[in-house]
Length: 336
Ligand code: NAP
Image 1: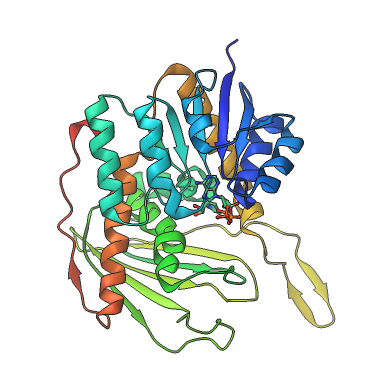
Image 2: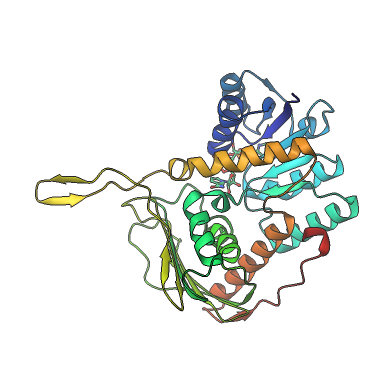
């Protein structure tokens, strides 16, 4: 059976996880080369995977022995790396966001359409999470009636080094921006982002939390709390309120503990553990599809619409929370 030969660019936290996942856990693919601008990071991952270190990202993308590329470099590098993959007609799995701004994502769409083949999958892995998939099945089956409201929260334990207010939207909230649209199958019509009181736990210069509000074309109202320094745990919440009922994202299950006048369960502290199964399903599907020469997951158009929404949310926040119309462009047949 054919095995997909994969090159990976970016050996940070998620690059290391994805490389080991592909090498040790998933089927029908092998990591053959990795690279990183920090050579020691690449060497560490190469050692873990028993593969070679490529000098540059371009060496990986242009290598005829490499069938497909995983991009796990930092966000601002995504656009150029994906464009290079398209130029070489390589299938590419790119971690979210596809690009840090909509205009970068638009360049990718143009290049991909001109090349005449869909090659890009964006790492919106929430769509592969069992809990979100169960929610979607119930909503699609009409179990709660027509959706009216969506309440979501994205709470991280601590903001990483160098996180900016824009990253809170383009890197963190981008998950909910894509996921919610997929969940309720409705285009966004207008967006707002407001900031209020900042947590004393937030680093200097970061207004945290931020509140995102979106109205869809059919009038569904969505609120998303983005809170990076919640300290108590990595806590992802989502509730859809319908005409006849509500459906909630199930919390990961931990054994209930009773002790010292306390009853409760632990909270997950680590994003890479919280969604570990979703990453596995996501990448296995990508491998299987790529071996068949097709793409089926979140595509460049999804990445573009998410980036467009993020751009306007940042604009709204910087204008003091004004409501901004989205005017979502029509999805081309190429990305149907
Ligand atoms: P990280 O630990 O900072 O890793 C990024 C790595 O890529 C760094 O080692 C970085 O080196 C390297 N890099 C940057 N530009 C490069 C280039 N042109 N060629 C090769 N290597 C390059 O960050 P991370 O947490 O792993 O995140 C990486 C990406 O994954 C981000 O885009 C993030 O949004 C995404 N991510 C997705 C999820 C998810 O749930 N789907 C979760 C976490 C992260 P320098 O430090 O020198 O820049």
